[in-house]
Image 1 (cartoon, rainbow over the protein chains, first blue to last red):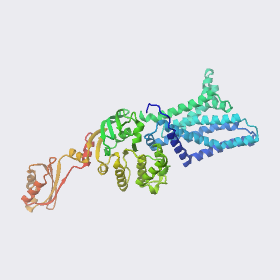
Image 2 (cartoon, rainbow over the protein chains, first blue to last red; image 1 turned 180 degrees about the horizontal axis):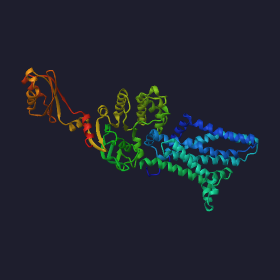
Image 3 (tube, rainbow over the protein chains, first blue to last red; image 1 turned 30 degrees about the vertical axis):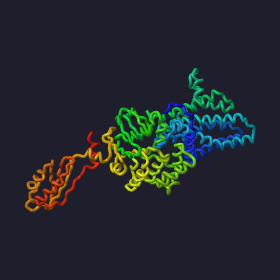
Length: 244
Length: 319
């Protein structure tokens, strides 16, 4: 509301982030997410390691993005929808906080949860490093890409959660938007020639694979960060919609 | 002036919820905001607490404007929204800590204040319980503790006793009175006795318009209509046979009486309702007449208009 520029007071963001993280871990959500994530990824990874005898993280980095498609909406769906449903949004927005602080705090909590879920997967990295030669650059790039991708997905999920007070709807909307981004560069053959580069650029996997190759290109960073920023901006706008 | 509301209007789409209302609340006053459901009470409160802006008009809280100094306004206000929304998965201490932090409190001062609120609101025995496990009465206390955590100058309570049982209502009312001693309080309700029990002043709002504003006594005087006196007489046999011809005209002949109504008899006891203009006390004349006529006066009672009737009249007449 206020138009004068203020320095960000990240204490408020931290307060909200802590609260959301705590409620993830207080409820079963965090554990379910961690377990599901690790079981699926672990299965894929050990398959490639023991059955195919490949000591590489390539399969891991190929699979995580599609697991994100289900895991991230499950994490983000309640962030705003629940507050709206039980009415606590009214408490939150009548505290001396800016709307963007609320959005950013919730974003950070969900993003951190994903990051926490990724930590145990470093074990795969260790085993691979012990068993064979690892290209450390691609691993670093891969993890960076996963974090950026998760950031974009979480921002989209958070935005979807501001649209409704129904968590299922929030999940589905988030999933559809993410899936669209994910599949953009997989439908290139159906796209007329002059559009292919545009559609390819829109696809999130295109940029992810580029970073996961260990090449950190500003174009990819711009893509991730602008998509992330834009989704958060939309979430703030939707939160402010009560004022229209 | 703690709160100054000026020409507030709010439309939801094309529907007018609040229609150009203005009022002031003095520092330290407990103001009851009374009206039927859908009258615009909640909307007005949501505007004062900066949940949403008005379509036009302005509000100043402790000198801060809701449009340009929203954060300062919110710092000054403790708010208990309608239906008292709470995070059911947090325990009482966690919740108070969280709301305190959202008011930028921390460290020892927050800890002390939490302890104080736990004591004042009687939450000691449930402080480590999840809010979801608490009864409605306790939840309401948590809601009040949450609203008071930053020691605000102004408390805005939207239907703080709705849904409670009679004992809980009394407890919460006492708590509000106790907490509100040094504060400016606006409390909304659709129950009149609530206002009678807690408030210094009342604003009655109906269909988005203020229809009455004043202390309870002022409203009672301003809006009551005729005086009504009920008389019960034990009549001598000769008269008792014909009350309509023997008694009725005589009662009517008392100078200040506007109307008399005969409401029935039990054995030799007859009941009449005597109406006079506002502010006239007819009881003395009635008594003298009874003495003069030799009727035995069994009961003589005056009924003043209750606030209930005032409220009813004010909120019904426009339909």
